[in-house]
Length: 265
Image (cartoon, rainbow, N blue to C red; front, side, top):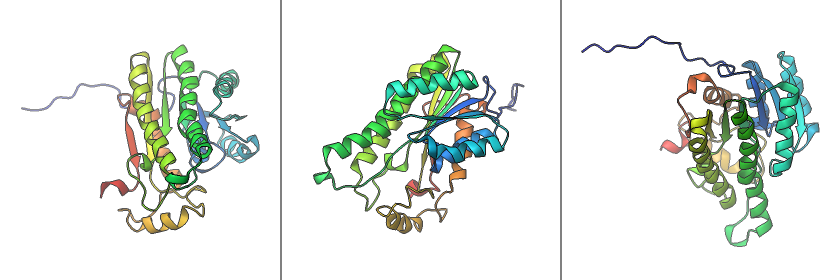
């Protein structure tokens, strides 16, 4: 029997397939967030850049404007629901209806589980898990109000594995929570036009990975990555753009591992 394929439009990697190319990126002052924000601009989006320090966003905004797109810098703590709701309102006032969002903001530190202070545990979960929820809540409400959109949350391979040599039970737990939060929101909003997915990077050449507490372990792990190296931040842009774009119109609740094969051994 010969297979037949119905004719139809080819999937598009353009970010404006489902509406105006307006995006918001948290954690946009550096690392993956900064590179993703620029990457979305390179794919045609105007971008609101959010971080806890507006001064740190200047370089990202300049880079976005350098490729001919508009950019807005907003100082906000992702763990503050009121601040994120205000950030989304300002983003829409200045750039237009929000259709795409990437939640990259996060913190990292280490401590033995048996002696970790409660305040250290709580602050990391406030930013890395509750902060992702408050962002999705504000972004999702805006998208639901005008017909839909797409959100990508940045997870981690640490949601899937417990990294050898790193005492980061709070970080691993928060990232695992991000993945189930992503799935839960995807199902809750699926019939109203908002897709929610996650990208989980492996070891990536960012300032966080080069922190003195982490860098020796990262160097040791690199030799065990099937592709033989860490990721560069620009290698996260393509997976994020794919999930935001019309090419992923039938993808929601997914976690895309971008780890060079690290967790496949």
